[in-house]
Length: 428
Image 1 (tube, rainbow, N blue to C red):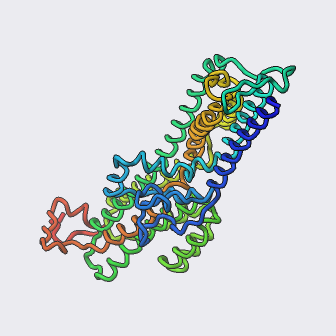
Image 2 (image 1 turned 135 degrees about the vertical axis):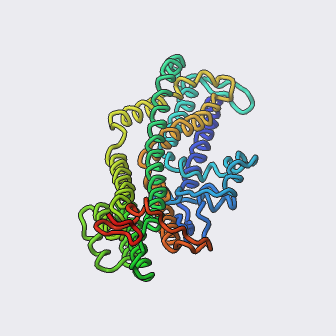
Image 3 (image 1 turned 45 degrees about the horizontal axis):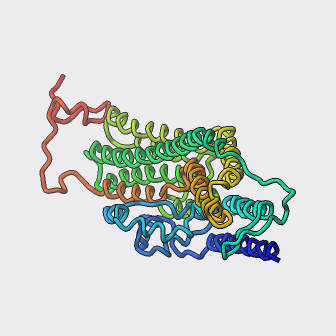
């Protein structure tokens, strides 16, 4: 009777732990979310995922690939204050069950938890249970061996596993950082290009309307390149319709059609930009300076294409995934004896859940960062570039109230168009 009672108690404990695991899986189920993708001209704050305004709103995210678009954060000073908040640990712990990273690990963590739960039940049947009153019950299956492994095996291999995980996350972060720097260079040099075009424009003999049209065309071609680059680096199902809509909205119809029909759209947009720069009335040396920014755009595009098409070597990521999975699946056998002071070694189950979640989480973060473009706020970058370029070309010399100094004779060569003689130049 005693052995049956102890077996029933142990079975009840195992069922309870599995029920808790099932509840955890239900918590990871996709929840509806009305937040839209980060965009500069949205009424919704562009911060998104890391905002502390409403914990439920920021953690109710879809699973898998769909959650990446909600990670495109753009911080402001207020966001940084919230990010440094002394209450951040409370908020993070409160939202742990709805974490997007942990939701992707539900099956892996549940598998490790099931092994730990089964191990507790099996070794209890083999070695005997302790009932709720502290009484010792005989083994139900005394002829079977107890399943354990020496903890030293995991102690010896843990440094190697740690190094593999560190290298994985560091390499992935470097890829994210390079992609972000590429877009930072795009932002900087789009502003620089339109500023130089505006400042170097030789408006002698040109009507204000023609000047405005030329500079507006340069600004639009500059934006068209970064928008085409964003589409080039984004999934087709996510961005193709929006890309076509924006091009037809902002560009002349024929130019939009030529970009859309091109086999390599960013290259076509860069060619349009080069044509627009060459068409500006200014000295060729100044045009050459502006063209240097176009070369930088090409470098940024090539660097981004390399990141998108070349993952971390697959044999590395696959070996790490196998190493980590096998290590964690066998870990309950090594930790079993360490929990001999808990009731029927029951402490093994929650400890295994925590360790598996944390270690699988490190590998998951590395995997999520490895392809950075679908978590970068590229649409926000494009919107900012459009707004800034259009604002820059709206400015004109002297509109700040300061009269312009006439060009000095020795500088006239650099402000005049080739094959023309400045009016104030001395005779040869």
